[in-house]
Image (tube, rainbow over all chains, first blue to last red; front, top):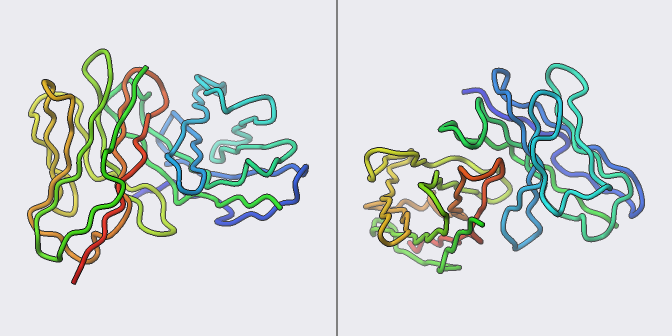
Length: 116
Length: 112
């Protein structure tokens, strides 16, 4: 069964450094998402992406964050200047249609980001 | 705004016993409802979903959930749990926005 893949599985970065998290969504999916889960807390929506532009973003997704689909397969999340509070598990998800359709979102295994 | 409440942070069940995990949602229209499971160190796996129609939905691994509009609930059930069911279970609601809104999760512990 096709799946969403994320790399790396664990990223350790010094505070203030830039980090790029990578995702390969399921190949026929058109909608892409990033979520984050701070340790012990709920999964929170960050951003959705469709047709090469941001569709929606949450309050968490401030100017430090950006997303990109650099080629036909990858979907990336960049954090420009990481802060300690960015330490979390970051999940990528994709779906065939938008969240307002009856197509579910499929999640990757996540990237654990640790900021030192 | 949509929201999800999972009132039980931890639940302990004996292997072979039945299971019910509670989920209550708040949403203005007919919601899309989901249950995801997260095993330690793993991602979120979709167990089942409700969009419309039959209010009792079947999922993978022997799980089912029932949508009750009058109670704003979407409880997850399994008639007989296995040790491998130990995990974190998340209820989520969608349909009003791109992002899913998740509950805080219920940690399921299986006793031998």
